[in-house]
Length: 162
Length: 288
Ligand SMILES: Cc1cc2nc3c(=O)[nH]c(=O)nc-3n(C[C@H](O)[C@H](O)[C@H](O)COP(=O)(O)OP(=O)(O)OC[C@H]3O[C@@H](n4cnc5c(N)ncnc54)[C@H](O)[C@@H]3O)c2cc1C
Ligand code: FES
Image (cartoon, rainbow over all chains, first blue to last red; front, side, top):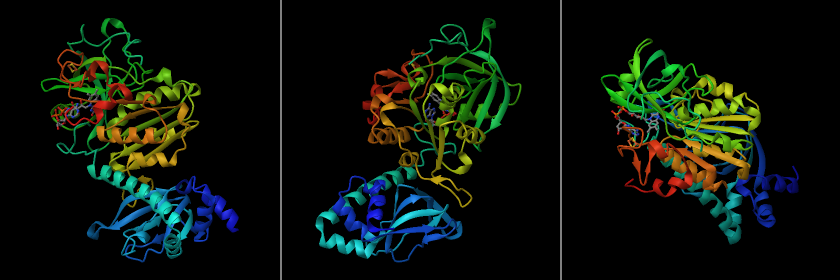
């Protein structure tokens, strides 16, 4: 894909909606198109987080290793969503395994390229952090709700409502 | 809201304090702790039993007690009444022990209903959590029966785990209806589950809604409804486009005892279905 085409398709991703042309071009220089086949891992827990992904199609499930409980699936991420922010936060290691439930088409953004752009262009850096903070806030909210176990099923386990 | 306007009869004698006897035709276990009672509706004075989607009955387990339970059957099938019940305590456990041919007491139908007439010509987003799908099932039946009258139908359903999903076969059937999407998510999945994992609010990122022409109907645990309403508003729906069904402990079911009071409202007669602005300020209050 030519850089111009890549910029245009990146622009369509909800994570980058309304981002101005110049910042998009900066991001494009760190981006590439990737495909993962169904049944393959995008990354594993503990590996260096060198990339993040903007999913265009397909679905990825995040798994944690639960010892004798085996792999525990905690969340799915799908088209239009962002996968991975461990590249942003020390120690820059993945906290989950990411497994493709279907064939996945995504933009892969190279983290070291992105970090260097963020450091040299504060406006770009701020814009990326602002967008990531929104994603983080939404995920935190969703995790809280998930932890509340609002549909609690056993007698005496439920909350106020049913 | 249409309330009880097209009700041909109420079960029980006026003012609906005395239950009528109804016979259990079948008990279907939907999950480990949730079952559907299929009941022969009582037909006082030879009239049919009619209800509006969203209404509830007071269901009496003889010798144990009474609980408010939404009607989960098809309003157009008047020969059978269904209640889908989550076994949580004394009454719902007693009801779970019923068998074919046993009797229960019924009073109702009570309360307001989902805004089906207002939804004509619009897209409809139904968001249900857990057993909150039960009060919405009559809406889905109605919309699909009159499919051409409505725009796109989006059914979002969140459940605790794949084993807790209600009405599996029907969800599958509904997803095949024209211009109808069914998206299910679970809070916890295992490796055999290929669907979504995450809270029901996360499903909105997979939908492009035409917000000005969408009406949302939400039912589930209160905290789930609160977050869902916030998400709908974030996506551009106004509060007036959102309806939800509330719950409180009930006794009389007809606005006399005050048990179900929710601020200035009585859930049994002003609700259970409310338009969001009617109760928005109460949703956030701890002491309500
Ligand atoms: C309008 C309306 C419609 C309802 N529809 C359904 C339905 O379709 N299916 C269904 O399974 N349940 C429904 N419910 C909830 C149902 O009424 C209660 O779960 C039931 O009364 C519990 O009775 P119990 O004797 O089994 O539990 P209890 O022994 O009384 O209580 C067990 C636990 O549940 C809590 N609890 C009891 N009643 C309620 C309630 N109404 N709301 C919140 N917490 C409660 C108690 O505080 C306690 O923690 C509805 C409630 C209302 C108000
Ligand atoms: S249950 Fe008695 S007033 Fe509502």
